[in-house]
Image 1 (cartoon, helix red, strand yellow):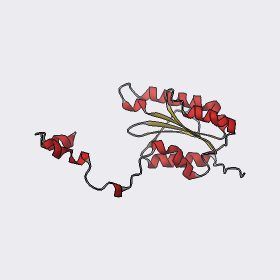
Image 2 (cartoon, helix red, strand yellow):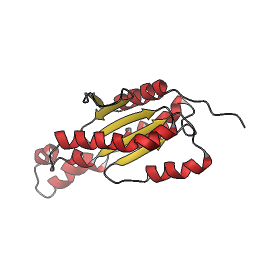
Image 3 (cartoon, one colour):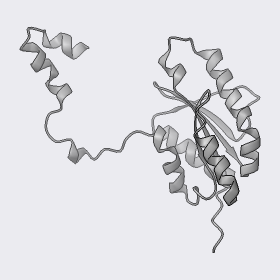
Image 4 (cartoon, helix red, strand yellow):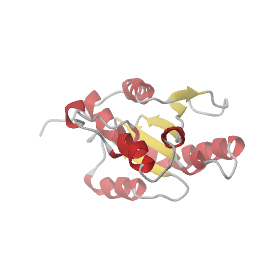
Length: 175
């Protein structure tokens, strides 16, 4: 069996940064204690910390530090009523492969939603730059084929429907 192609830390960081930026996220400046292979992003709805590691073992041993950095950023800049406070994502990537018995640990980390949601991908899932897109899909805008959006949607018709009940269409449009 051929060895999987290993994407470098730089390639993963650049690809993920590009995808998040194209997806509507803005990069946010971080404190000096953030690693050079980490980035912080936000959009109107959530906050994403991207951390890229050389190996699975580094990711496994240091993900909790990455989580603490993001929790500290959120705590320092958000107040309780802000909805964005509850939409924190920790993206953990490594081009390094995992052994079969380590994949269980990857899954445990992936499904650990304590404090933050986590997206985790390792070398076996990240063989090409397109695989980076697949790993980030939960954070990216939906790619809806515009040809499927024919006809009028319910929201487009809402002012008209409510006008039948004597609700001013301009009020509905404003809401």
